[in-house]
Structures are given as C-alpha cells and as structure tokens.
Image 1 (cartoon, one colour):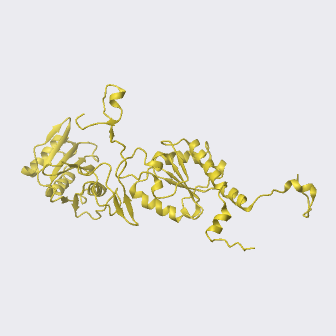
Image 2 (tube, rainbow over the protein chains, first blue to last red):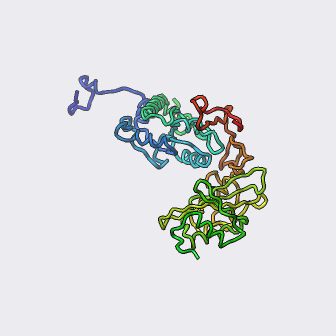
Image 3 (tube, chains in turn cyan, yellow):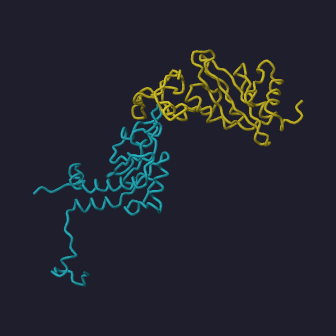
Length: 176
Length: 201
C-alpha cells in the first residue's frame, strides 16, 4: 500500500507504520552490516576468500565489505594459525578497531592452536582477544563461516545498544 | 687448472676445492650421488665459499642448515648447500663445518651470497649461533626479545613460559600426553597412526 501526498494521520495508511524500540532498531542496523576485518594468517584465509566470492557470497548477509583497515571494520575474522610473533600485532590491530567490535575465531588453529602444539604457536586466539564465535574445522567449510556470521548476527541483535552506552556513561539519560 | 669450471660434476668441483685449500678441507665424501666436504676451521668458511662462487660458479646458496650434536664436541654443525644454477649444470655440494658451543660464532657469508641473510638469521633465532659481520642479525621467526633458542636439543618441544610485559609472552603448550609421532612405512594403519612413541621404536 503506497501513501500518496498525505502526511497527517490517516487510518488508511496504518499498515506502513512499524513500531519498535530504538535498541532493537539499532541492533538490527548493526547486525546487517557487519564489516569484516579479514585477519588471514594461514590456509583458512583461502576459505575466507571463497566465502567472499560469488559461490558462497557473504554479501547476502550484509558483510561483503572486507576492510583491511581496523578503523573501518566491526568484526575481526581470525583465519589461521596465530604464532606468538603475530600475536602482538593481532592484539594491536584488535585494539585499533572501533567499538562495537566482535571476533570470530575461524578454524581449529585460531580457536585452540589446532595441530600446532609447539613453542611457536599461541594456543587459541582467545588468550589475547575476546572471541564471540568459534568455528570448528580445518579449514571450516564456507557454509560454516556463514553460519558463524548468522550466529553472530543473532548475538548482535540481542545486545542492548542504548543500555550499554548508558552503562558506559557515553549517553546521558535525563532523569524524570 | 680447471678446464671448464662450468661443466664439471659435483665430485670434480669438490676435488678442485680440496686442491685449492689442502688440509683445511677433508676428502670429498660421496653418498647416493651427493658430495660433501668437511671444513676443519669454521673461520675460513667465507673464504671457501667465495672461491666456490667466483671460480667454480656455485652461484646459488640453496640453504644453510644447522645441527645440534648435543653432548658432543663441537656441539654445532653448520652445513652450506651450494649449487651451480646459472650455467645450467646443476652440480650441488655441501660444505660442513663444526662450531664449538663456547664460541657459537662463525663468519657470515652474506658478502658472497646475499640470500644468506635470512638463512643466517633463522639459524641465529633457532640455534643461537651468531654470524659475525651480519648487518642485521635479528630473530626472524620468534618475537624480538624471546630469551631461548627453540631448536636446541635441550629445549622442550612444549616450550617454556616467558613474559615480556606489554610486548609478548609464550606459555607451555598442553601436550595432552603427546608428542604423537607417526612412523613412515608402517605395515598397517595401526602401526602408522600417530601415537606416543619412545625414541627406540
């Protein structure tokens, strides 16, 4: 139903109005434009490229904008083996990302160190950054990464944006 | 002396090095078509390498490897794999030299082959053998400031905990009963699969 030129209240156009809360709307915006930061460190990065390419097509979920700058991205996808040498760089890149930010640990290596049980390998990227979603597989199928992204979207949709801002004293709410 | 250094076999090239340096070099040892020379004084390695490159056209340094002969003297062996590439001949020989643990130092061959830069950095990182007159002898695989040399025999596979606050850290890796080792050429899948094995097996 298309409204014409009437901007006042019109009972006939009631169907065009959607009621929601600001929190839910903001979370909906956030969840459907998660810009990934591809932290490609090993073979998982090849699967991540497949996720971004046409066959699997991460743009169906609003996440096709892979940004190689931490300033412009929301979700770091750690795809590969994190060595101790890389760990400090990874932490620094994570710290440079603007809030809100999320992390997907893609594959066995990023989640737990995987088969690399040695002096050189960080045993799971959750030792240095908070991980939201872990993806199993070595490497995971692209479908698994998309599933992780959908689960992350579910998580984002449940996060109360305004309440967090108030709690962090970034938003002043006038007391009644 | 050498009729054509461009097209000699690896053994002939090794004999020419032996003829040039005499007692410094052992007799060439051939094993399965591969020729190795032992250099008794590691301080002369860059002189030998320069001769091999300039006179015998060994223009390609394939690799430098190092061995920890833990409990023996000299503790370190450093092996240079050099090859003729530019002339299409493809002869390859290995130059071995021993370095004692107290010294743990030998001259860099960077002035002969530039590719030695990262090879020598790797050996410094993993074994702790220093290369004199290397312009940039930093760690290449482990982080800067890491206190150990992990490929030494007395370093545990699971690593040691280290902490450099604000820079980096390492922790002991949970081995979960491992390391789990496969055996090549096992008769069946049970023999071949990764298991905890004693070194005698």
